[in-house]
Structure formats: C-alpha cells, structure tokens
Image (tube, rainbow, N blue to C red; front, side):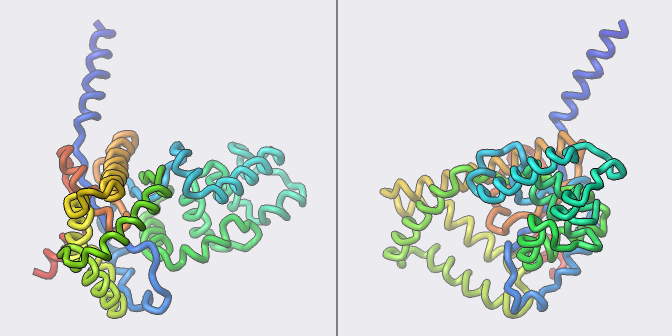
Length: 325
C-alpha cells in the first residue's frame, strides 16, 4: 500500500511540475552603452525595479555550460583559456571541490592566480565554462586585483554593458548567488553572413515600408541614447514592433531570397530555444517567478513563445507604459 501511495505521489508531483505556469518579467537591454551617454541613463531605478520584483531566479542571455556547440563557436579563445586554467587548477589539486582552508599554500600557485583565495571560486566557474557567473563573482569581490587576467581583461568591457550597469548590481542587492544562461547561438556565423546578404538586398528595395520604419527607429535610438532615455525606448512599442515586423515580413518581401528565409528561421528558432530553456530551468529550480534580461530585439519573440505555452509574461516596456498612463 505504501508503495502504491509513493508511486502516486511521485506521479502527481511530476505532473504538477510539468504543468507549473510561470510568471516571467522580461527586461530588454542594450548589450553596450556608450561611455559618452551612460551617465545620462537612470540605471539605478531599473536596479531597484529588479530588487523590488525579487524573482526566484534570474535568466540571462548567456550560453549554458552544457551547450558546448554554441560555446565553441562563439567563444573559442575564451574556452581555450578556460581549459588552460582548468588544467592548472587540477595540477595544483585545487579543482573543483577543495575547501578554501585546504587550498595549496605554495607560492607558485598564488603568484599565478592571485593572493586572494576568493578568486578561486570565480576561477572554478570560469574553468567550468560558466563564464558569466565567473564575471559576477569577480564583480562582487572587494579586492579584485589584476593577477587573474582571465577576469580583469574582459571585466573592463562589462563596465559599459547591461551586466556591469544593471544586472550585476541588482543581483548583488538581492543577494543572488548565480545566474542561469538560456542563450543558443550555434550556427550564428552563417546567420550573420546571410544577414549581410539580406541587408544588401533590402538597400535596393527602399520602397518597402518596414525598412523605412527600421531606419527611422535607428535614428530614434540615437536620440534616445543622447537624451538618457535609451532603456525606455528599446523597451517601448515603436522599437519592439519595428524589429519584430522586420523579421516576420522578411520572406514575404524578399520571396526569392533563401537567405531571408534562413535569417527568419534561425532567429525564431534561437528565441524558441531560449523560451524552452527558461521553462526547463525554472522547473529544475522549482521557480515560479522569473526575471529575464535579454537583448531588446529578443523580447517580442520570446514573449510569444512563452505565452503560447500558457505562461504569464510581462515586459518592462508594458510596465513603463502603464506607469505613464
């Protein structure tokens, strides 16, 4: 009897897990903020918004460690450095589980990897290909140092990105320990090549209204950046609608272009995979409330995919719009 009850409860819990509906909030970001204009943007209010939201997990536009195909294509040099670091840590018997108080004390190890033993946690992230959590750990250290060049070289670039200006500071306020990557970029080199060909074809089709809308949107993007309203603009309806319309209409406006069909197919597939990974990650973590920070061009298509699965999705643009009305 106990066995039957146990099996029933297990089956019921699996069913509930599969049917869990998520509450997802999506913030569209720029991946890089011009140094000239970043001081004009109100990043602190967005950090506070994330802190007030207090999500169960934060998903970011990073490739998860198990997707080695994407990782090798996008960051081959980074992974080569990670492999080298991993070999060094194994050689020094410090990878992956040795407690801090049992770390090797020989000078050669700490000359290479820094005197601050807290760096080792970030080094373990990095050596495991969990690159963004490595940078987040490095971001939180009070004494960062430059001895572990794996972090310091790229960290300077992060200071002008959505991670250094929005995501990491907000997560630190919440006491978040790690992020969950949901990106997928295998085949991106072919996508970029096709994208160049499509753009050239569109240049000769300037009568196409959506392209004119897109060009106007880029002009508005620059104005928003210069006025300190960039985050508001890229999350607003004009930008969101113009980009999604451009992607959706490509094969219709260039019906003889195989490149246009492939660009749309790749883009929709990438966003669908990201949506699927959000759902899977939330289920694995037992999370109901999810925050996603992702490049603003992804917002509409990820929202569509999640809503098609019955999940509740709120975008930062919708929240701003409701506050202004």
